[in-house]
Length: 455
Ligand code: MV4
Image 1 (cartoon, rainbow, N blue to C red):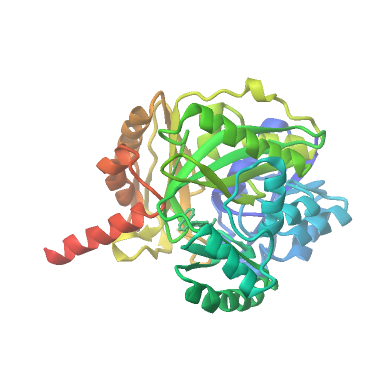
Image 2: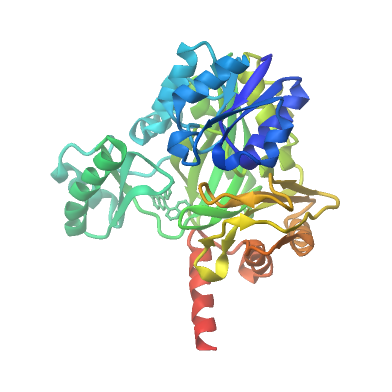
């Protein structure tokens, strides 16, 4: 096991990694920017190093400063958390060159799965279902038009190096396709330094289904079942839950096993999420693979009892996976809501400033992953998530009831947060009936706007 882990992140995920370190008897070290000098998570570390000014580009994204901080504090591993450098293959490579273990996949595995054209090719080979479309990147527009005519419109043009919704364009006719491929290529080149784009069938009213997997350095990989993350706005998830409601058990097993097989075939070590869209017939199509721990990992921890962050650290240290597939069972239902310092009534405008009131919810099956407290000043420089509230119950209905009460107990002020929005979502009949898709939150927010405008 490692002696010391440097955490190349901030906020709730830094605290989450510190907790895992303590349980493993590993010494956690934090880095922080000037804006995070008073970050409450830093108190929990054994040492902390300031790595630069507030701007991420001058602190949390500076590879040489992170490596220097690891060297001066004697850290033998780096946990990147999510965001920042967590999916940066050059960072993983520099760590390796400096004899510091990057807690995550090798740069080779990251590049293989991070490039969506490569990832789709590997998925086809390992039996993971993908959308029909061009085999690889588009070489020739006439070839792409031929493929689109075969699969039928609408189609979607995606950047191979993109992700999380960046660099996508829908085309509903051949004219739109011809017009958009060149635009998409130029955008992708400017944004990612890679102009490779591909075309696949566009699915209109899908649900978002993602399989948690984890692999070790001994050729093993397991899945920890899936999460539904359909409730999102502008590609920012609001609510996540596990298991995905109403999915046929046999279909679930098949898609989860195919995700584990994909990770195994990539010789992948670490946690990975295989994203899918699910149509009304419960057919699945892979979208992309995330090669980091995700914000919403706690819902999977709650239903499986597996500590994902601890397992990431164990496999990075060379231990074999501590469990086999048949040991992993689903227990009950878990829901997570993201508590953002944003005003849902003002177009989700971020709210920086002092938290004066912070009363945390509690009781059976309630978990709060947050770095915030009364007296904490939210800096304006980073994302606005100040915590995640996760509940676990025997059934989905029990989990919703638990979440409703936990949200009532939770008091944060004077800043507006997404707590009020989440109360309304928990009370929504469509949400309660799991009658949703990836567009329903945005549709519902829009329809609420109209009714308030009419009053
Ligand atoms: C799609 C799609 C429909 N059809 N691909 C958005 C994020 C990126 N991971 C892929 N995305 C989508 N890809 C096909 N072939 C619709 C989306 C999409 C979406 C996916 C998951 C969660 C929310 C979404 C919101 C809008 C669009």
